[in-house]
Length: 141
Image (cartoon, rainbow, N blue to C red; front, side):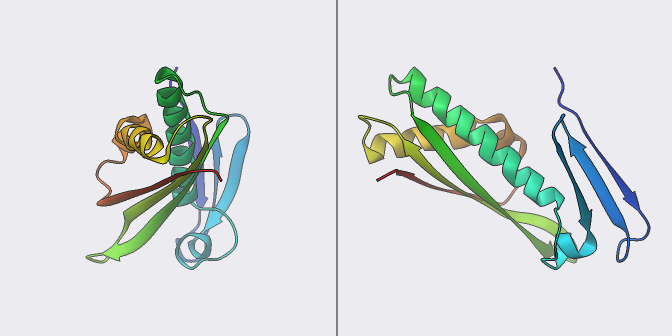
């Protein structure tokens, strides 16, 4: 089933406002300041970060379970960096930081599975044009 989202922008870019919805329960507002000046509100890059973190966590959990080490949990934070490149706003980096609670698994195996999830999750593949996607993976202490 296709996933759907929508957005509407009203006014010019410096002073206008936008709203977005994704699915049944995600909605928010955004402005020039919330997107480019660290102002209050949401922005599209936060939605990309949340989508990437959610997809990656689910993909890694699946890989771990298939390898015989079902996780208690996988938590991932994603940070999307937006910078000007040749005068155009561009997503230049996504940093994934994931922490797993996986009984009986060692750190190197967890990292190996995390790298496979990074390469294979559908959102990672969709974002393959981002110049730098980093991954920091560790087990909860």
